[in-house]
Image (cartoon, rainbow, N blue to C red; front, side, top):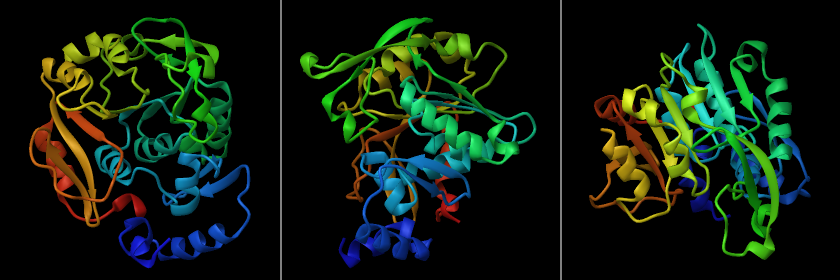
Length: 297
């Protein structure tokens, strides 16, 4: 990695020790699994040879703009959801922020091996944080049922690509039958979900179809989601239909940045295409407006 790449990364600017850790780990043999201590003090079980694990292993963080919005948005006692939890990186952030006063993070991960690694991480967290997490080994879709989880050949290098949505290369996939749940059943009234992270690899519309009551009642306040489609997309249209404001979530060196969709996008460092759908746009703008990376310090 070039020197400029270190300078332009807040992960290194705000945690100088991570630069030395990054160099050392880059020169050392890569382990098949490793425990990483995250900036907020929790340990996470990762696999450094795959995309998510490698980012956490080398920089100590992942999807920094998403991480910062989660950190700033939640408070002790809040109810949050991590839909598509993977190894639990975002779950750990939510748990740290929601812990206390009856706070809860419901984390959904259908893949049995990944769910097991997530559970092993939660078991290591301090009791007051770990007891906040309610793990669900389940996919999220339109109704409570069983569904087929498709595992493409790319899964070995990126364990975030398994999906309930079928891929074109059907002959190149494994399939696992997993439990599926609907968000309306998981979060019945009068529960108010302060923040949800939704990353289900193209299955977002079906997940939202199972959250009609949540959406119509306004009990799902803000959703951070990934969307690779041109804007406006079918997913953003579904949120807009229920009164949500949509913003693209971007990363600058000085902090996160919210850009209304459809407007000009400034040339900022690459981040995955993440968006914010919210019933509280003024609050979200206020949350994103202050400079700095609180989750790193």
